[in-house]
Length: 164
Image (cartoon, rainbow, N blue to C red; front, side, top):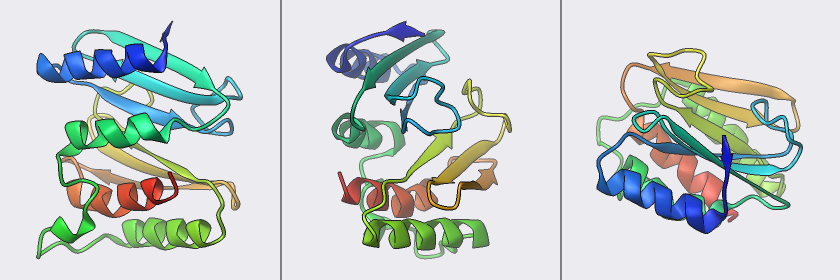
């Protein structure tokens, strides 16, 4: 991983997106299962370019995540009202949404991961893995799918950025 400023990461993400290269990002808390640095961490990964960039800070960098999420997942990802009419969340997604709401009500920070196939953190590749880390219970909830779970993300991303 190459250490970079947030602006450098932002520009790299925009370049990857413009060049239609696969890319994604992670916002990790200091206690995240994938984070061994003990600081808030923002990771940008492009499997196509074989490049990974990281930024460490004393706060979650949700602003950049909120800017990049629509580029990565579609411009309606932060609008749950655009969910497909026939969408039925799985039991695990219902649990994640319920728990995220509970933590938001208590102002307890939480985070999640959308691990794409080929992501360095995805132990379930070639599946998509949506992982919710519960900071109070100390456990994770997972949902694995064969395709990008866009409707699930519309529920979870909205809750995550609600406390931005």
